[in-house]
Amino acid sequence: MPSRFRVSSSRALIGVAAFTTAGVLASGTSATGAPPAQHASGDRTATVGAGPGRKGDSAVRLISWSGRPWLVYSNASKGPEHVKLTNSTRAIWIDSRGRLHLHIVKIDGVWRSVELRSLNTVSYGTYRLVNDTATGKFAPQTVFGMFVYRPGTKTYTNEIDVENSRFPRYLKAPNNAQFAVQPYTQPHHEHAYHVKPSYVPLFQQFTWYPPVQGNGLVKFETRVGSTPHSPLLTRWKYYGYSTPTAQNMYLYIDLWLNRGQAPTNGTHTAVLRSLTVTPLS
Image 1 (cartoon, rainbow, N blue to C red):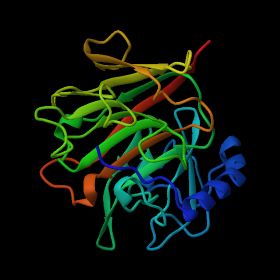
Image 2: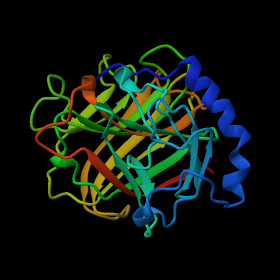
Image 3: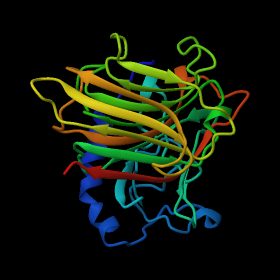
Image 4: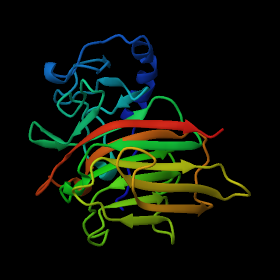
């Protein structure tokens, strides 16, 4: 499991700016920096500053997808393993079917990854992702993640992960996916499994429960299909003190390069059908 890098002064400033422009998305207004014409349908984008995707761009880009507003981290930001990010419309757009497309792209000779964060905090509930990607065909360096995390906290804490990657030198073949509650280095904090290239779509979810006497519960599962009734591939649960509380937690999606290495021998793109959050009653 590679280390995560989530906080920098530039990213904090971007987060503040994002909230000041959230009204654009709420009103459904399109702004500058829309995706290329062939991908523009369904993408409501707001930007502050220069158009996304330009060299050295630090503009804020907001999108509305799957019923939720998102901040797309800019070229001035860094993600896991300090990989360079981009909010270029070459790297992220929404198609006419409402699916979110993520691409690791090369801009001015530099490979850049993609990361989104929910504008609003999240809490206990069920997080369901329908992934229209053949994750079993990922390049060894490609990592896709959906997770909740508390920014600014100690490394390997306050994080619940669904990850799809071969993670060379970490996961044992044929495993290429995992669930984790950080810190993953502790016993019984992660669960690895194998996703075949033919398993498309994937239904991946976790249900996050509040702690009872200091111990929280997270239940995970992956199914081959697009519904909670599709054939079960794997199921796992974590119960213990490492389950984060809901204070100041955000939902993230990312597609990035493990160790910052260039992608080889496989795909480095993801297409997501939907991501829904159902709060606990």
